[in-house]
Image (cartoon, rainbow, N blue to C red):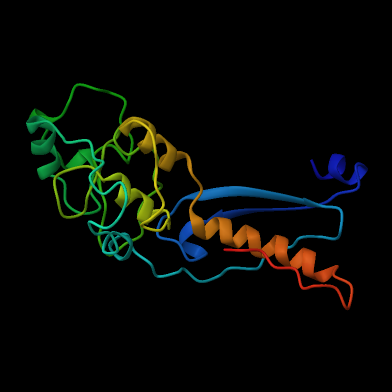
Amino acid sequence: IQDAARECGYDVCAKVVQDNTVGGYTTRKRAVVLGSRIGLAAFQNVSLLSGHTAGDALSLVDQSWTNFSDVTLPTPDTRRRMSFVPQGGNYKDIPEEYRTGSQNRHSCTYRRLAWDEPSPTIVNWRKPPLIHPLENRTLTVAEAKALHGLPGDFCICGALGQKQQQVGNSVPVAIGRYIKSAVLRALQSTRKPGLIPCTVGT
């Protein structure tokens, strides 16, 4: 990729960015590639975790948030299975006699968030399902927004399943800001004296 980009006049940098290393609440990772024709848009080195947890994000959510009531309610059987899972646990904590017959299981199947740890990657959390740290239910759309760093007044539209998929497909805000900072530094490094300063809104 880099050789092909150079032939077209681009300098390319690439980095795998994890949300909670750049100020976010989740362990979501994204591979980011930046190509520039005005000089290398280098990423800042990140060596410290943000220290933010799932509980930090969820504690921000109240009834003033849009999408506060958007939630898939579990059936009684699903709620019972959830009740066996401790914080940080998953389907393996459910007694065999209460498990479903599905063989399509992975570490996020019936995964309960840990209040004092970063959230795992937020996908469409209704499907595994991903469980609230303190309650036997899945996350609301508002809570998933908070885990991605979105503000309370950011409205997700559509049917409930569409709202869940939109948040699950999105890139956490902290990763977006990290990318923005690399682009902004590249633009500022080429700014000529006397020109209006280059800014990028948050």
